[in-house]
Length: 262
Image (cartoon, rainbow, N blue to C red; front, side, top):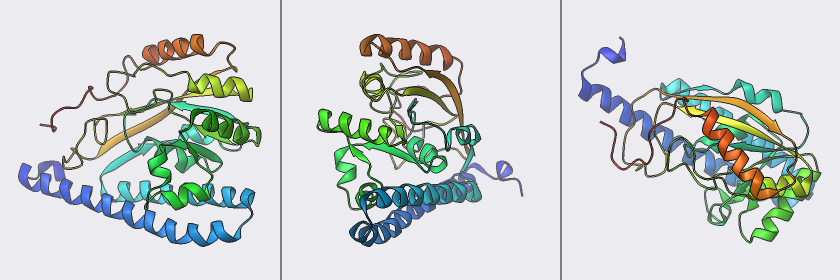
């Protein structure tokens, strides 16, 4: 039976069940990664630990996204990211409409390091896997920049959201200078990435108690690759103008999200 033909209360119930199944599955996956990561980090050499951790995270995130598709909760078009796999070290700079953004990018790039908030690196659910993969704390700033430059020097991709947080205005927030600073110091290019979605699910201001309309559509496409910048502040303004232009007519929710969907 076509679900769109179901009465609204029944359809809403199905969507709520899918959402909670998705949250439960993510929790179980994070627990499984933690149980694997703790002994692996204890016995593996650091370089092998990081490589193993990143491949493990890519594998489980890809499984998670496929599970969301199987549940009928989401549709993903992420294939353009595959062109980056195995390529040179880059700063990967996407816009940031949702908490799922990092999951989507990391699922396709098994040699990517991510900059995370310190509380996530220290968390029970995410911390062990993040430390195994060598993910970088966002504080203190000098250590974060040096860690990112070191990883890029070893050929890694660096996932860094240049807005610094999830978007709170359409189509992007003001850009911070961190992406340009790291790219300049590491002498690597900045690959822009555009994430489009038709839902505000898990965007800034979205309550986990709200149920989105499903399936939610996500699409990722590659943008321009910028040479290593010479002037960090100028580059941040250039990057913001480019994102504003490229996303002006993109499929994105309105910001900020202050009320549940109708």
